[in-house]
Amino acid sequence: MSRQRFSIVQGWTRIGTQFLPFADAATADLPLPRLLRLALFQISVGMAFVLLNATLNRVMIVELGVPASLVAIMIALPLVFAPLRALIGHRSDHHRSFLGWKRVPYIWMGSLLQFGGFAIMPFALLILSGDTHGPILIGQVGAALAFLLVGAGLHITQTTGLALATDLAPEASRPRVVALLYVMLLLGMVASA
Image (cartoon, rainbow, N blue to C red; front, side):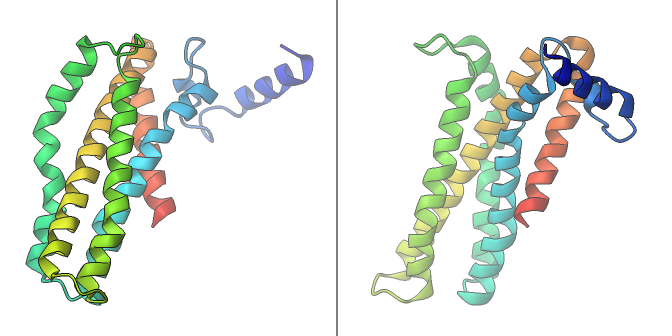
């Protein structure tokens, strides 16, 4: 390690955990830059939560005039996949991909499902707005499908990402690592709000 980099590390260590509360979550096996890169999936999950539950909720009810009961059902649709989190976690524990990875393909698949849902959503909202000649039912089905895809993606990404973090972290620092990941989830929510 270069002399300048070593002095920077010593400077951060002197500041202590009073100003850097999760600095002690990093270990030699899981340094802080790697831990922060790992926490990026939680930031994306937080941003997706805000987009689904706050922005689209208000847009669909206020601007598009979709009945609030229908929007409530659509917002509840992602919870359909919540019981499957245990199955997803078990599968990512025991089944390796053809590349030899256990967790990363599930994180990728969850991210792709989120992207697919968010890609469908604008078209469903266009139909719901009445600017097109399509039937409103297609817009409602498209919005429901988008909410389902995003919900499935959120649950898959979050479950396997947290499992990957606990795999990489030493047993003594696991509580602090998981706490850091949930703080990153909250930061993603605040940043996207």
